Amino acid sequence: MNWDDTAPSTAEETADVPADRLVAADADGEENAVEAALRPKDLDEFVGQERVREQLDLVLKAARARGATADHVLLSGAPGLGKTTLSMIIAAEMGAPIRITSGPAIQHAGDLAAILSSLQEGEVLFLDEIHRMSRPAEEMLYMAMEDFRVDVIVGKGPGATAIPLELPPFTLVGATTRAGLLPPPLRDRFGFTGHMEFYAPVELERVIRRSAGLLDVEIEPEGAAEIAGRSRGTPRIANRLLRRVRDYAQVKADGVITREVAAQALGVYEVDARGLDRLDRAVLTALLKLFGGGPVGLSTLAVAVGEERETVEEVAEPFLVREGLLARTPRGRIATPAAWAHLGLVPPQQAGGSGQRGLFEA
Ligand SMILES: Nc1ncnc2c1ncn2[C@@H]1O[C@H](COP(=O)(O)OP(=O)(O)OP(=O)(O)O)[C@@H](O)[C@H]1O
Ligand SMILES: [Mg+2]
Image 1 (cartoon, helix red, strand yellow):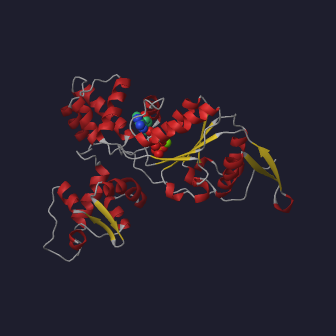
Image 2: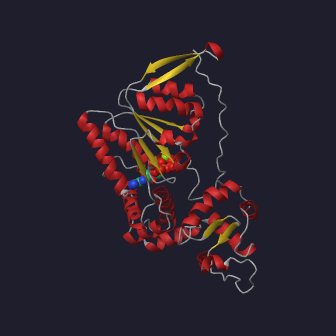
Image 3: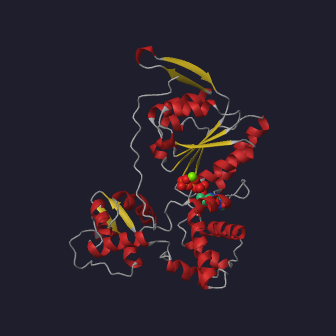
């Protein structure tokens, strides 16, 4: 049998993340294990995201009451907000097994057919980074989601035949950081779409206190608040900073995380009071000191900080933009007045010439 299709696998544009990044670096094996241990196991343990949680709770309860398989669920939102965690919770709440794969791992439609045809009834198929699936696999998925059926193509060229294959009912949980990149036909086939928001500091405090309990670390409420304020609205970052602060507390203090210990530790790791790390500050500093606050092109800015264009664009900028420190304009990147204030610098307004003042005074 020939599972092959002729579609070339699309080139992956993965941002080159420097290994020394504390808050956004890809976790290594041990960190992955800790992360898994800290995952909430059911909806009640899952902090925040009230709306998504309530809606999902209804979807799952109703499906359970009908004795049916839950509708397909799409989860979108920035990295580290809990999409993978929630997919595992969906399976747990449905008492169903979960199969985990990702868009980039499915090179050919045949890869997907193999996975789909081996699913058990009611199983949850978690498809991470669903926006990075190949086109033929995506088209196969349309039919599988809607009719629980796939056409397996056997042979090549004019002699190729499509053999229909029935699938057991299953629940697809798709996750994406880029919902906008999903083709509408795919988006429309999900019965429920949950968009994950960034977390409020009080919610992150709860995440941190819960994780500290699991890690058996003593933490004062002010210590949790200090870490939460620097965690960029993201539980994964909150948990990672907590582990670094714990290290510091063990080595330099008596193991208890107070506000002072947290602040000192995060100072050592170059995470500032607003959650900016070394790369974020390097980008801002270059923008202010070398280019007078801009506008400057992305490539120039990237060269100035010695990073890849994608790293600056995808790792540093989203947070800087969200914090209102940097703006992307058609003419290039510009710093906002808040950026000058954050780095304690004075904008060279009187020198004039850049014309950017007008942008903020209008
Ligand atoms: N609502 C939450 N309550 C408590 N902890 C959470 C919550 N959301 C996420 N976490 C923690 O944050 C970590 C990262 O979450 P998760 O892996 O689910 O994010 P993700 O959205 O799948 O990220 P990515 O887009 O990078 O795959 C997990 O280890 C989990 O412990
Ligand atoms: Mg994930």
